[in-house]
Amino acid sequence: MSDAGSPRQERIRIDKWLWFARQVKSRSLAQKLVAGGHVRVNGERQRSPSALVGPGDVLTLVLHSGSGHAAVRVLEIAACGMRRGPYREAVALYVDRSPEPPADREAAPAAPIVQPGSKPDRRERHLARKLAGKDGI
Image (cartoon, rainbow, N blue to C red; front, side, top):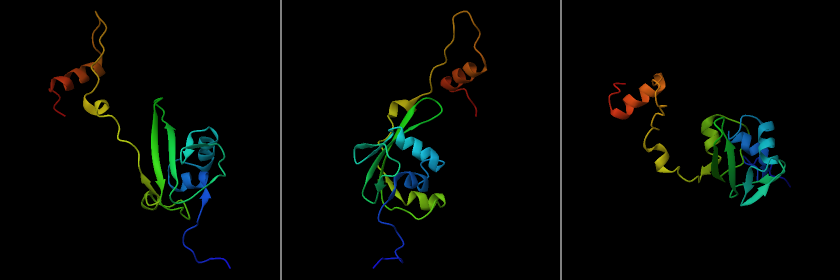
């Protein structure tokens, strides 16, 4: 006897869950992320996009941005989901256990780099004014 009226599934493919939870833009990107070895399930590297995950599993994702830096996200699965819905539905699928970024990264903007004997460009002048506290914006 099957439980056809159940609102939640017990387990779901990892690529589908990543897409439902809005961690990636498409399922094909989710498959590439998993196949590339950038996803761990409960501490074990996963290379199969068809692996099943469910509530209670902890995913560790290494997401690369366009700037060349990688962000590590630690997500505990709270629910499997039934569709890729709006943001409010997506955030209900997981609990974010990611560590806080280091405070020294956000503390102060980088000092402008000025080559000796050259005039600062617009960006460098703006940063210098900001550091001096003269930026009125």
